[in-house]
Structure formats: structure tokens, C-alpha cells
View 1: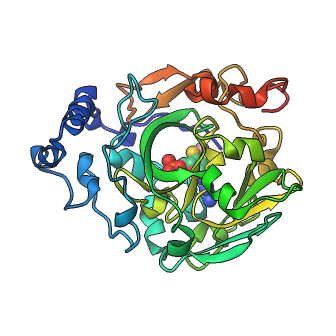
View 2: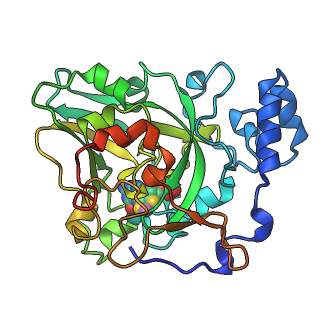
View 3: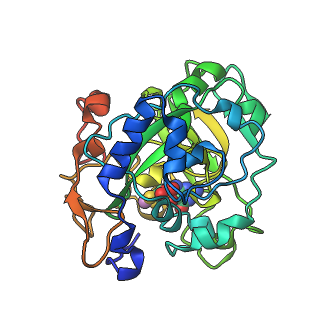
Length: 337
Ligand SMILES: Nc1nc2c(c(=O)[nH]1)N[C@H]1C(S)=C(S)[C@@H](COP(=O)(O)O)O[C@H]1N2
Ligand SMILES: [Mo]
């Protein structure tokens, strides 16, 4: 991955959502005025919960989606002092190499991906393997909102409100055997709709593969997401099902998942296969361990433009150290990058 210099087209200063907007939204939601919040902002979508966020394009949610939305007041976690990245940035500045390597490619081409019907396979070292239609796969779970920082290894970042459920809940369902030590995820492979898989982009062996140690996967911060900004996931963000592990670089958060396997050995991940000396299995956000070609000490928080680059210090474990540091006690994080 190459670092892109900020260009004025990345975002306009006028796109910045003031913190006050977010705070006032929270205040409204905190009282029983959630309904009124919608009418206060004229440019929002229709009668979906997407109306909670400004400028969200309403989607066409699958039938099972609405009944899974959080019923009570939505909870924000870990977002003190942060404002949510505008929807337009989160959906037009993406990495999803199956649809091309330019940041705008996923928004331009991922619309061709058909996410209904969708099948998820659970296999490997589990007591209850299975092959599920997505709506059946989702049956046991209620959605929660999780507002997380997302830090890409390329040194840009966003704050995204996801809708998902803890990965640990899935693990409880499928009953890993005593041999299961890692969890492996696979993205859809379909060169007909994924131009990145049929071009001469031979560096990547498809499908895209990612993985976690089982204890990392059990950490309550790790979620499987099916939505963001109060609506279902846009295709370019990994519809209909993706992983979100906020304390790790973004490439761990694999999109458009079709297969989840419990395995004995550490899976070989896509980015390790491309350049093992640059992208490790752990990929924990760590400002003290630089990428061989650039510093990881700072990041550009989107929206970021030439005249307001919005640069900030990168935090250890992306600011989630209290929750996850104990997973790595005794591990040399310089070697296990
Ligand atoms: N299948 C797949 N998943 C992927 C990627 C990809 O190219 N293919 N890119 C990763 C990278 S590098 C990042 S930073 C995040 C970006 O997620 P976002 O576009 O929703 O912000 O997705 C990750 N998941
Ligand atoms: Mo990334």
C-alpha cells in the first residue's frame, strides 16, 4: 500500500462535521426527543434509523435488518472528544481491492455486487458447522451500535458508527473444538463482478483472507458488522457482512465475508502473502513501530484536505489499550507487528 499525499479533492473543509452537531444529536437522543432530531436536519434520508446521521443516503435494507436494530437508546462507546466522519467520506474513500486500488473505485464499482441472497459457511474445528442464508445466520443476534476509530496502515483514519454484534456471540453458537486456535475469514471471490480479481493484479492471491487468534476474536470489541450510520452496509464498505477489529490496522477488518473457519494453525493472510515484512499477522495499531516505508506515529483524520490536514497522534492499540493490551502481555510487539 502506498501512502497518498492529501489532495484537495479528498475532502473539502466545508465537509467537516462540527463536534457540536454530534453532541447535540446525542443530547436529543438522550432525552426522549429522538423523533424530533430527524426533523431538525432537512437533508436526511427517509424513515430509517439512518436519519440519525446527517447526509446519510438511505439504502434498501434487507427484510431481516429493521427488526434487528437496537430497540433502546443507542449507546456510544469510546468516542469522547471525537466527531463521527461524514458519511460521504466513509463511503467514498475506501480500500476494497477487489474493486480496484484507487480510493474511489469501490464506490464506483461495488454497486454491481449482489448481496441478496448471500451465503455464509462456518466450518473447520467447530461442533456446529453450517451453511447459512445470511438472514438465518443473523437469527440469534441483535444489533448494537459501536462507534469506533478506524486506523488504516496507510496512516489515515476515520470514526465510524457500526451496527453489528460481538464475534464472541458467533463463537459461542458454533462451539469451537479444543483444536481451534485461530479464526479465518474469507471474502467473496467473483471475478465477474470484482474487476480487481480479473485484471492483471497478480500480486494478490484471491480470495482476500484474514484471521485472528481465538482469544482476540473473543474480545468484546471485535464485532461482525452488517450496518453503519444507522443503515445496512453500503457495498463499498463490505456488505453484507464484515469484520471490525478497531485496535488493529484496517486491513484486518475483512469485507463481504462468505466463509468463517475455525482452524488449528495461524492462517496466512492476504497482506502477509503480498509483503510479510511490511504487514504482519497481528497488525495492532502501534505508533512506536513504523512501517518500513513510513512512520506510524501520526495519522490524517478524515475529512482531511491540503489546507486542513487534520493530523493527530496515533494512539497505542488505536486508543483501545485498556480493553486489549492484556491479550499481548509477554509478546514482543516489534517482532509480532
Ligand atoms: N476483502 C477486502 N477487505 C478489506 C480490504 C480489501 O481490499 N478487501 N481492505 C482493507 C483495508 S486496507 C481497510 S483500511 C478497510 C477499509 O474499510 P472501509 O472502506 O469500510 O473504511 O477494509 C479492509 N478490508
Ligand atoms: Mo487499510
